[in-house]
Length: 192
Image (tube, one colour):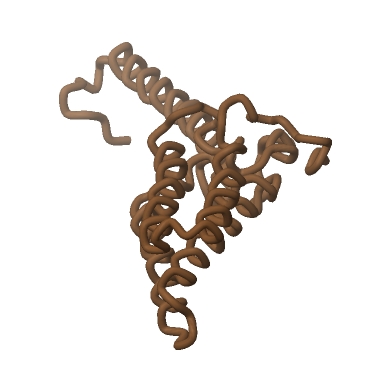
Protein backbone atom coordinates (compact mmCIF):
# COMPACT_ATOMS: atom_id res chain seq x y z
CA UNK A 1 0.00 0.00 0.00
CA UNK A 2 1.25 3.44 -0.92
CA UNK A 3 1.75 5.89 1.86
CA UNK A 4 2.10 9.66 1.65
CA UNK A 5 5.64 10.79 0.98
CA UNK A 6 5.94 12.67 4.25
CA UNK A 7 5.29 9.53 6.28
CA UNK A 8 8.04 7.09 6.93
CA UNK A 9 7.16 3.41 6.59
CA UNK A 10 8.06 2.89 10.21
CA UNK A 11 5.78 5.70 11.41
CA UNK A 12 2.65 3.64 12.21
CA UNK A 13 1.22 6.28 14.57
CA UNK A 14 1.40 8.96 11.86
CA UNK A 15 -0.34 6.64 9.39
CA UNK A 16 -3.09 5.95 11.92
CA UNK A 17 -3.56 9.67 12.52
CA UNK A 18 -3.80 10.24 8.76
CA UNK A 19 -6.46 7.56 8.32
CA UNK A 20 -8.36 8.90 11.34
CA UNK A 21 -8.31 12.36 9.78
CA UNK A 22 -9.52 11.02 6.41
CA UNK A 23 -12.38 9.07 8.00
CA UNK A 24 -13.35 12.16 10.06
CA UNK A 25 -13.43 14.27 6.86
CA UNK A 26 -15.60 11.66 5.14
CA UNK A 27 -18.06 11.65 8.06
CA UNK A 28 -18.23 15.47 7.99
CA UNK A 29 -18.82 15.40 4.24
CA UNK A 30 -21.66 12.88 4.62
CA UNK A 31 -23.22 14.96 7.39
CA UNK A 32 -23.03 18.23 5.40
CA UNK A 33 -24.49 16.49 2.30
CA UNK A 34 -27.40 15.25 4.38
CA UNK A 35 -27.97 18.73 5.84
CA UNK A 36 -27.71 20.29 2.38
CA UNK A 37 -30.26 17.81 0.98
CA UNK A 38 -32.67 18.49 3.83
CA UNK A 39 -32.31 22.25 3.47
CA UNK A 40 -32.61 22.30 -0.33
CA UNK A 41 -35.75 20.12 -0.67
CA UNK A 42 -34.05 17.60 -2.94
CA UNK A 43 -36.61 15.75 -5.01
CA UNK A 44 -38.78 18.77 -5.80
CA UNK A 45 -38.41 21.10 -8.77
CA UNK A 46 -37.72 24.21 -6.72
CA UNK A 47 -35.90 25.14 -3.55
CA UNK A 48 -38.66 27.26 -2.01
CA UNK A 49 -41.11 25.66 0.37
CA UNK A 50 -43.83 27.69 -1.39
CA UNK A 51 -42.82 29.27 -4.73
CA UNK A 52 -45.83 31.63 -4.55
CA UNK A 53 -43.98 33.60 -1.90
CA UNK A 54 -41.21 34.72 -4.24
CA UNK A 55 -42.70 34.72 -7.75
CA UNK A 56 -43.19 38.49 -7.92
CA UNK A 57 -39.54 38.98 -6.93
CA UNK A 58 -38.34 36.89 -9.85
CA UNK A 59 -36.08 38.44 -12.40
CA UNK A 60 -37.98 40.29 -15.14
CA UNK A 61 -41.47 39.62 -13.78
CA UNK A 62 -42.32 43.31 -13.36
CA UNK A 63 -41.27 44.05 -16.94
CA UNK A 64 -43.31 41.11 -18.22
CA UNK A 65 -46.30 42.35 -16.22
CA UNK A 66 -46.01 45.85 -17.70
CA UNK A 67 -45.60 44.44 -21.21
CA UNK A 68 -48.69 42.25 -20.85
CA UNK A 69 -50.79 45.25 -19.83
CA UNK A 70 -49.35 47.26 -22.75
CA UNK A 71 -50.14 44.40 -25.18
CA UNK A 72 -53.70 44.24 -23.81
CA UNK A 73 -54.06 47.98 -24.36
CA UNK A 74 -52.68 47.81 -27.93
CA UNK A 75 -54.94 44.89 -28.81
CA UNK A 76 -57.96 46.80 -27.52
CA UNK A 77 -56.84 49.89 -29.47
CA UNK A 78 -56.67 47.85 -32.66
CA UNK A 79 -60.40 47.07 -32.53
CA UNK A 80 -61.82 49.61 -35.00
CA UNK A 81 -65.08 50.61 -33.34
CA UNK A 82 -63.63 51.17 -29.82
CA UNK A 83 -62.99 54.78 -28.87
CA UNK A 84 -59.87 55.81 -26.91
CA UNK A 85 -61.79 56.49 -23.66
CA UNK A 86 -63.53 53.12 -23.92
CA UNK A 87 -60.20 51.35 -24.51
CA UNK A 88 -58.62 52.96 -21.44
CA UNK A 89 -61.62 52.02 -19.30
CA UNK A 90 -61.58 48.45 -20.66
CA UNK A 91 -57.83 48.17 -20.07
CA UNK A 92 -58.27 49.33 -16.48
CA UNK A 93 -61.29 47.11 -15.77
CA UNK A 94 -59.84 43.98 -17.42
CA UNK A 95 -56.51 44.46 -15.63
CA UNK A 96 -58.18 44.94 -12.25
CA UNK A 97 -60.58 42.02 -12.77
CA UNK A 98 -57.76 39.64 -13.71
CA UNK A 99 -55.58 40.83 -10.83
CA UNK A 100 -58.48 40.49 -8.39
CA UNK A 101 -59.13 36.93 -9.54
CA UNK A 102 -55.47 35.85 -9.46
CA UNK A 103 -54.36 37.70 -6.33
CA UNK A 104 -57.43 37.81 -4.09
CA UNK A 105 -59.73 34.95 -5.11
CA UNK A 106 -57.64 31.91 -6.01
CA UNK A 107 -56.29 30.10 -2.94
CA UNK A 108 -53.54 27.58 -2.41
CA UNK A 109 -50.62 26.89 -4.72
CA UNK A 110 -50.43 25.34 -8.18
CA UNK A 111 -47.41 23.37 -6.95
CA UNK A 112 -47.08 20.40 -4.67
CA UNK A 113 -45.37 21.95 -1.69
CA UNK A 114 -43.88 20.40 1.43
CA UNK A 115 -45.57 23.01 3.66
CA UNK A 116 -48.26 20.47 4.67
CA UNK A 117 -51.20 22.60 3.51
CA UNK A 118 -50.34 25.84 5.28
CA UNK A 119 -50.99 27.83 2.10
CA UNK A 120 -54.21 26.00 1.26
CA UNK A 121 -56.47 28.65 2.83
CA UNK A 122 -54.40 31.69 1.79
CA UNK A 123 -54.81 33.74 -1.36
CA UNK A 124 -51.80 34.52 -3.50
CA UNK A 125 -51.63 38.05 -2.05
CA UNK A 126 -51.54 36.64 1.49
CA UNK A 127 -48.79 34.16 0.56
CA UNK A 128 -46.64 36.68 -1.28
CA UNK A 129 -43.38 37.58 0.51
CA UNK A 130 -44.39 35.29 3.39
CA UNK A 131 -47.14 37.74 4.40
CA UNK A 132 -44.76 40.62 5.10
CA UNK A 133 -46.48 43.92 4.32
CA UNK A 134 -45.07 46.77 2.22
CA UNK A 135 -42.35 44.87 0.38
CA UNK A 136 -41.23 46.17 -3.01
CA UNK A 137 -43.36 43.70 -4.98
CA UNK A 138 -46.46 44.50 -2.90
CA UNK A 139 -45.86 48.22 -3.37
CA UNK A 140 -45.50 47.70 -7.12
CA UNK A 141 -48.75 45.73 -7.31
CA UNK A 142 -50.50 48.42 -5.25
CA UNK A 143 -49.16 51.45 -7.13
CA UNK A 144 -49.61 50.10 -10.67
CA UNK A 145 -53.46 49.98 -10.54
CA UNK A 146 -53.44 53.53 -9.18
CA UNK A 147 -51.25 54.74 -12.07
CA UNK A 148 -53.47 52.89 -14.54
CA UNK A 149 -56.53 54.50 -12.93
CA UNK A 150 -54.99 57.98 -13.25
CA UNK A 151 -54.15 57.34 -16.91
CA UNK A 152 -57.65 55.99 -17.61
CA UNK A 153 -59.25 58.96 -15.89
CA UNK A 154 -57.10 61.42 -17.83
CA UNK A 155 -57.73 59.84 -21.24
CA UNK A 156 -61.48 59.57 -20.60
CA UNK A 157 -61.45 63.30 -19.75
CA UNK A 158 -63.02 62.53 -16.37
CA UNK A 159 -66.34 61.54 -17.95
CA UNK A 160 -68.74 60.66 -15.11
CA UNK A 161 -69.66 57.19 -16.41
CA UNK A 162 -66.06 56.13 -17.08
CA UNK A 163 -64.93 57.74 -13.83
CA UNK A 164 -67.42 55.74 -11.74
CA UNK A 165 -66.56 52.49 -13.50
CA UNK A 166 -62.81 53.06 -13.12
CA UNK A 167 -63.17 54.10 -9.47
CA UNK A 168 -65.24 51.03 -8.61
CA UNK A 169 -62.72 48.83 -10.39
CA UNK A 170 -59.81 50.45 -8.54
CA UNK A 171 -61.48 50.09 -5.14
CA UNK A 172 -62.26 46.44 -5.79
CA UNK A 173 -58.58 45.70 -6.30
CA UNK A 174 -57.08 48.08 -3.72
CA UNK A 175 -59.20 47.33 -0.65
CA UNK A 176 -58.19 43.64 -0.42
CA UNK A 177 -54.53 44.71 -0.49
CA UNK A 178 -54.80 46.72 2.72
CA UNK A 179 -53.08 45.17 5.76
CA UNK A 180 -56.35 45.41 7.71
CA UNK A 181 -57.91 42.89 5.30
CA UNK A 182 -55.11 40.31 5.52
CA UNK A 183 -56.90 36.99 6.01
CA UNK A 184 -60.33 38.65 6.31
CA UNK A 185 -63.22 37.08 4.39
CA UNK A 186 -66.11 39.55 4.14
CA UNK A 187 -69.51 37.87 4.65
CA UNK A 188 -67.68 34.52 4.65
CA UNK A 189 -67.09 34.73 0.89
CA UNK A 190 -64.09 32.64 -0.18
CA UNK A 191 -63.70 31.28 3.35
CA UNK A 192 -63.00 27.68 2.33
